[in-house]
Length: 191
Image 1 (cartoon, rainbow, N blue to C red):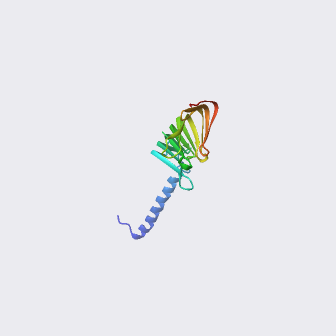
Image 2 (image 1 turned 135 degrees about the horizontal axis):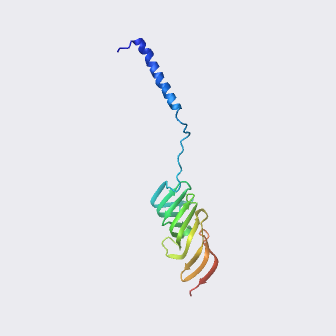
Image 3 (image 1 turned 120 degrees about the horizontal axis):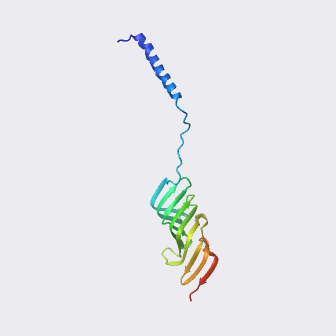
């Protein structure tokens, strides 16, 4: 069937308008979905790394502290990173360094607070290649890198050469080189 030109000029616009009207009518029948909401997953890492190292420099470009872990998993919902075998090093002027090693840990609010969990060993070296001059053994250490401090509420042993101090609770200020055992302190001094 051949449609005359005059009829085609009327039918084509009517057909297009009919399809548009049908589309609007079908669309209005759909339920309102509102804004798309993305489900917030809790306790699901958004990033992870193997052999992770983060280093913070001072104003002169020298290392201030370094955080290393064999594995790091970051959780965006609370800005927390879980760390496997973490090692935290606080660098002091003159080459002195304090190295803290733990079984596991967490970095909170980026690296504003670092929690070393389980058995923790802290060692002081007076220079980069110098032997360890002081060792501290404790558990569950809280570090505030910006303040150069570390604390624990657990039993603590400080070993300096052949001398040993034991107590419960530790406060360390790496900037000032101060260590404080909080209670039940007793010591053994070798001649």
